[in-house]
Length: 215
Image (cartoon, rainbow, N blue to C red; front, side, top):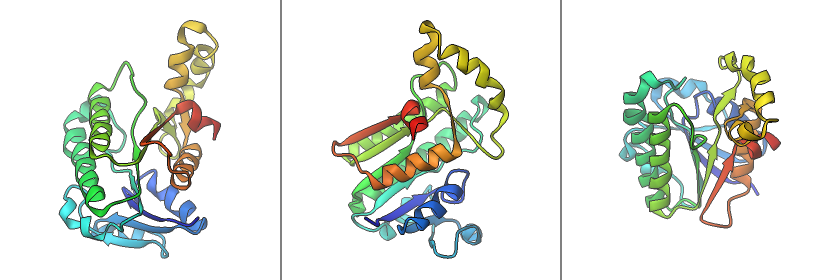
């Protein structure tokens, strides 16, 4: 069934690929954008001009019963961006959860990250706090937990594929290699579309790397 989907981060790396796919499948898509980014959206995508770090700027425009997709995040995460993770990623999910709760959304989809992992502690901590906020709000939710998404401008980890191939076949490293495996942008978009079209029956559904890769 066609759904109304409210997206934050719709002009980012993931959002630019996801929105056309949702529109092509006859979903109504509403994207939260800053005024200078409206032109980046497809013409048949409805724009809501606001600030993802201030729920008051968009909360009243989140449709009741809609699916809320939270994609806001600092691009190209690295350990040097710990401060930005807390000032952007964490604040945006807090504002989105508050707005979604007040609006009475039917389903909240959160782009999280694979956990646990041996690096990027600040990034992981912020995403875990985001998940905890969603749980505390009592929202029916899907958490997607990729590790690294290969695509335009995100290709350097292709060099690691042989290493992953070996690790996935050795019993001591198999579980970690699968949990922290690489996924493609196409696989992520498919996983997000599937999450939109298949809300969880339970309160929270977690989609890990192996499920994302299986499509």
